[in-house]
Length: 323
Image (tube, rainbow, N blue to C red; front, side):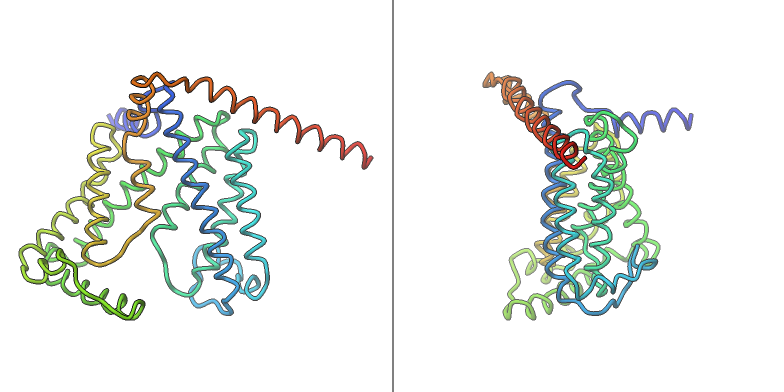
């Protein structure tokens, strides 16, 4: 019985929703493109920020075993950002180089623990890190690119569901059912207003915040919906519930943004890309407008193969010249 459960879970997480369709292929590539794009963005943001750091306040992850202070006050963060960029771009465009996602993840994590050695731990960057880790693991255990992408996306979906559900449990264990008391939302809104005021020099409540402050029941219902969404987030593991639960989770983050002025931008974009059935939209668009996507894909493959042949030819010629 337990084995049957895990077989069904594995099927729901890692088998493509509509196999061998153009929409599914583009859907998985969108997930990969999102990961690569934000990996590069954060790599360079962290690289330039780390140049200003001089001391480690809170060692995280690898920083507990490696003295990352040796990277401070040097140009290593920019060199590391360049390497990460090179590796993920090569893995994106060349299937034989997909194993570089694993190398990029190690460098990305080293970059992360160096940048956030001051005590602040963000959310959005963790999402991107998990996506990169999933692609890295998939590239090691699966020969074909499409299988590694399927594993990477399923890997992220599994830990998203697990993370939200365990977050709900931790709230209930720490505070009990009274966590949803509207007074708590008032407190968090007041605390965040101080942060916004210090950053921007001005702050005013929006209409949702005003309603929540005037009506404790509304504030309590707001927190109750958020807690229930987190509690049942594990349902994203199953395809019939996935889209609905992702919409609920996106709504949760929109609620956090509207009440506490906290926006996890790349995290929310990742939820939109991973959680919504874009493959259905793409397949419908292709069928409805009779778009010859196969022709475009074959041309792109021809260009990629020519680039691979060009780089391989020149690398061999350089080696023979050296010999």
